[in-house]
Length: 287
Image 1 (spheres, rainbow, N blue to C red):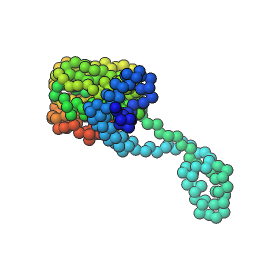
Image 2 (cartoon, rainbow, N blue to C red):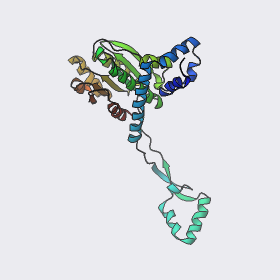
Image 3 (tube, one colour):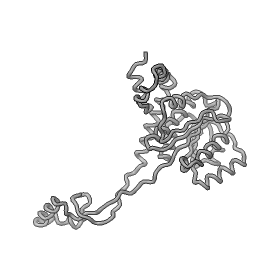
Image 4 (spheres, rainbow, N blue to C red):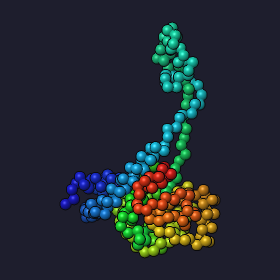
């Protein structure tokens, strides 16, 4: 029997809404519970939660508070917006009484402000290498980073797409505004490692997805552990498309020195082993 508190903890960790599972037939619910409590899923959920928390701390540090923009002069009782000339009256006893009266009547001269609008963030396309050398801790960490990206997309209402690739597309995911049904989260977290590596395949897929109106301003993230050359013809097409669309590609290379990736990535993080800090820096670029 799966302990209720453990199951609830895994659901909360991955942002899974338990009410959605109540509409699933009993047999499937039991299977979902078993999947949630499997050692691999629990480990990936913990890793994802750790990366997600680091991402949120990076987000909090990078999203500086924007000041409101002064728009015009109006009357009111907002002391934080009162004109300096009004505040100067507080130093005079008689004028201080008048200040109090006009404050009660909401007739103090103050700035009318309007908030400065932030530029919206675009969708995210994630490409995860599942070649044989990615087995074990690398694959678990890459999946956890992908899930944390999905969670960020969900919280920020950004569309999210992802593929796991070797020499071909192995598994494809698309979540509108980052909202993923439980069965798709399970499928995402349990992709295994096998096969070789081709960067042209996932990058071609990403360019096709990014051409769609919904993903037009998407950022592309790649996670891999071994470099492979892309054909020169495809490289030229990729660079021309990046320039035409203003496309950004960010890559994390696990266990190597980035060379090929630097040719077409805007940012590359080379780490000798799965590193939360590298993921956190990437999130700071994206959010």
